[in-house]
Length: 391
Image (tube, rainbow, N blue to C red; front, side, top):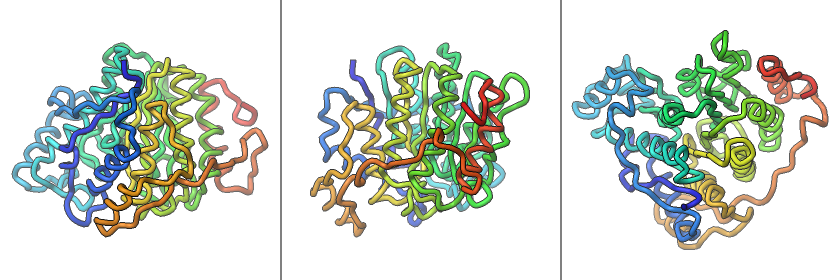
């Protein structure tokens, strides 16, 4: 058994909203080029599998049948369907839209199935993580919600508890909405405060449907300019305790890397190094609480040459149990490929570990990040029998 499986096909580059759109397939192309240049595809602990097209039935586990038909129609006729978010500035139409999005979803769902059956321990789909798509509408560059469909596959195969961790700068609203009333899924999203960033949701007080699912939605909305050290402090102050209480049988994590300070679509300042640390934490939590079952997805990230490939190559390496050294020089062949596209290439993979202050050292009410964290703990911890001040 290979320890980790990476889903990839050049056809995933067909998810393309056109010139000038932030979600350029170049970011995926450069990621795969870096993964290859680093020798990760030669690792015995990693295998690559094709991204298969999802069936309508598979997509309809999380999306309305009418919406799936509308996506197929819009991607054929190129006639907008604005009521369903198709043909907007965020989600422009392109030929083959249904097939391209169905391939993203199919890859994530296949990995989820392989995880549950024990065929693999870890799965990675850097083209996945389309966390904004709603059951009946496209939203925020996302047509089909592969993250939610992967979670649904795990539940359908018998999982009783699945944790979803969302590290994207934008709130994981679509996944949260789909499982808002399902106590079998714990969704945790750390994101820029919705008052300053799309989609405008994800307040700390939003904790899931009242009743058995209450406390199953966890939101950590951090303020603009939050640094990597502050971001890690916020994650560490909330996530491990809740995952420990929930005892998931699988962890699905979304590693959108648009929280970086160079990203053009957010206002956070989370370094590559901090994001790699979050990957390591997700991986460790899977081994500690979920028998190692870990599905890691891509997501947002629009600094296409100096951030996205670095973060996602590191994610693949982490899943393959072959972590990359921080600060290592990136291959000259890859840098040349980036520069041939008239883009600026990063020279090193970050610079080193990020030191952060543990929550155990005390809460500072004058600090905006600490106030956000404490608001989340107060809103969620009592539902899990935890003390927001001390646990």
